[in-house]
Length: 299
Image 1 (cartoon, helix red, strand yellow):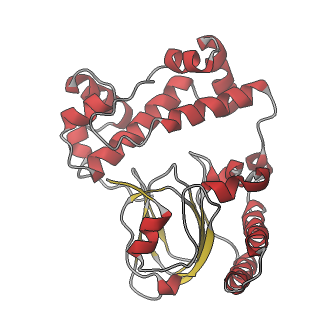
Image 2 (image 1 turned 180 degrees about the vertical axis):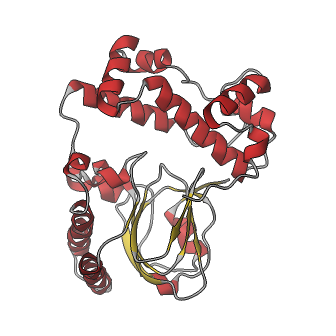
Image 3 (image 1 turned 90 degrees about the vertical axis):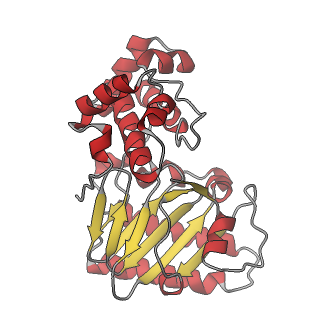
C-alpha cells in the first residue's frame, strides 16, 4: 500500500501547476473538472478531503469491499480511509473539490465532524435527478469563482461546498445528523478517534499499541466499565468489537495491498505469534490470512 498522498503529490500525479503556494499549514481548496483528470488513481490514503460528483461508471475500492458505481453519485473521501477509483470504459464526467485540514478547520468549521467524513459511515450517495442537477450547478459556480481573482474567493467556495454537503445531508435520515451532546457520546467519539489514530501502519517497525478496552480506557482516563457502557450505549456494539473490526480492516488492507509476509503483518498488529493472528483472523472472518489475499468482495 502506498503511503498517504498529499496535495503536492496529487498535483504532480495529474501534472497540474498552481500559482498558489500549497503547504500543510495554509488553508487550500481547489476544484477540477473530472474530464481533465483521467486514469486510475493508486490505492492509498490522502492527507486531504475530497468531494466528487461522479458522472461515469467505475469501481470504488476500499480495503475489504468494492462498489460498482453505475449511475451519478456523490463521493466523500477523508484522510482516514484509503480507497481507489477505477474508471470503467466511457466518459468520466463531473467535478471534484479537494481541501486540506487547515481549510476545514478555519473559522471553527464543523464540516469534518459531519457524518460523511466520519470513520465507519457512508461515503457514497446516489442523488435523484433534481439533487444531482443542483449539486452540478454548485460545482459549476465553484469552477467560475475559482477562476476569478476575488480576494475572498475561498469564502465563496466554502459557501458552495456547504451547499453541496447540505444537499447530501437532506438525503439522510435524521438520526445521522446527531452531534455528541452527552458524556457517553463524547467518550465514544474520543475512543473512535483514538482507535483510528493508530492507523495506517505503513512500516513494519510500527507496532499497534492499543489493542484492548483496558488500553483505551487508560488513555482516556476513564474506567474500563465506563468506556464499555458508553460505547455500547451509543453504537450498539462492544468496545472489543470495534477494536477487532478495525484490526481486521487494517489486516485486509495489508494483506491485499502490501507484499509483507503474514508473520510481519501479525507482528505489526500486535500479535506475538503468527498462529495467534491466524486464529484471531479466522474467528472474525471465516478465512485464513493466506486465503484472503486472493479474495475480492464486491457489495
